[in-house]
Length: 301
Image (cartoon, rainbow, N blue to C red; front, top):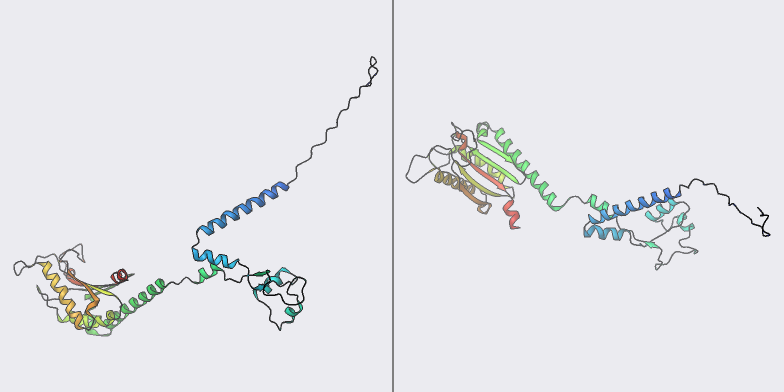
């Protein structure tokens, strides 16, 4: 536009506004890659934080350069197979493939293009799940089950012993075995008011001893009575009676050939630990308990 009152021309330029286009989606791809890498990084930190020194050393060896040469065969699968299974010198494929960049002959031992063939530590961890403690526990468990089976079979094989089977209670625990020889009304294990073992008790013990003698466990013998008050000598109660019966059981066990150092405790608890808690006067509360355990042996070791 030119003004009539001015000799100079005034030119007004109106810039054209460029049309706004849509932003590209490249930033989304980059952001997704960043989040994936970040997640992998934190996952790696979590794995390393839960690994012990031996596992970390195995990881380091796994990613350390090795003496296995990189074989350049077309195709990524062929390269992986060449790394995992090196070709023999007589293999024509191995002879026809160059073993180094730009060289026809084999690579030198000093070449830096080598990788370490360390064993994957996680595979070793999965395979080596049997520890000496687990092996010992499994062996003891097998021995306990075998001893229990031998005891049951020996009492079932003889009609005389089958009648005494109700007097014997065998319980297998995780760390040992508990054998209880209980009184029944018609078949007492001790004479009334006495610590002298009956013939039935000695018969049971004769069949029981061979099975428990082979167990590598220590013995604790405990005598029990019912809650009826002892009526006999003055200053003699169920406490003394239960202790005397436990000691009589100890002597009878030693006569079967079991070494004396296997027995680590002999005690009498009177009626303090009844078998039939609902009836402290029940005949079955009169019993002798032989507890076989390895706790004391483990503490000594």
